[in-house]
Length: 342
Image 1 (cartoon, rainbow, N blue to C red):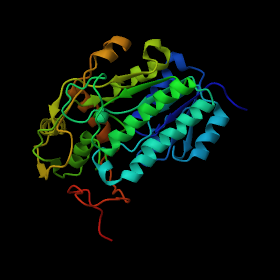
Image 2: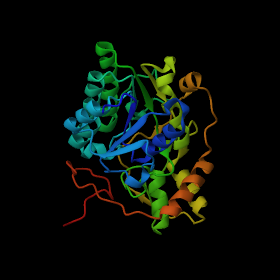
Image 3: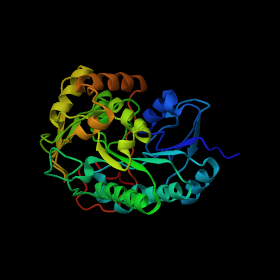
């Protein structure tokens, strides 16, 4: 029997998706709706998916258009929350085909199905990677100038959503989070999520790797501050077809972050400085628009967010750092990212 009261969450076994799923389960606006989580488990874990009769887990990828079409036919989703992506921004230079297949073409599969099945609202997680460098504070009105394939793919999906709205009336909201950290993050992934990398290395009693001098600036965003506006978006008329920066506002250097993580684990900093890689040096965003539309709520202080994540990380323990096995370009690959020799 086809349900008319369903929600699709792509990437729901991953970090941000698992938090969003948990919040949807307790949000009064979504009570009575079946939640379908689609995840290929390339970066997520089955145990991240809440054990609830209201949640159906499906193993698969958004790049599988036949699977996507089958799910939309079966469930006739009312809302789509699209979080699935391979979000290794720096690595995206070296995995261009993989990046565009997963992050752009996979999104197009969902947009096509959403149009055909009259989805009421499509919520997409983009990234401040769309802005590029030299544009701080990053504003939604700033002309995007992405400098890496990851940012390019995210901005392309934003443009495609707007085109789908203008052509077919698909309603959407885009969020551009940045440097998100917290519980359920894949701390064993050595290519992304520096907070998780630092915590995992400390538990393994290994030095903390920093590219360059560590003076890169980022505003690290606790995951609990990101989810509420995303959940509210389909019910806020002023959020329809709009783009919002979402996250923390106070930038810190990567070196200061390393010291803060070490304080939380009560260890002396042991830093491994690696050759600088090609990346945006300073990246932080303005969130006035999000506060105006969704209401201002104080951001979780970095020390408190790190404390919460560290408590969870200790409970699950260190995880093995997997190698990405399909590097397409090896020229200029940063130190520590090379594949092991056979």
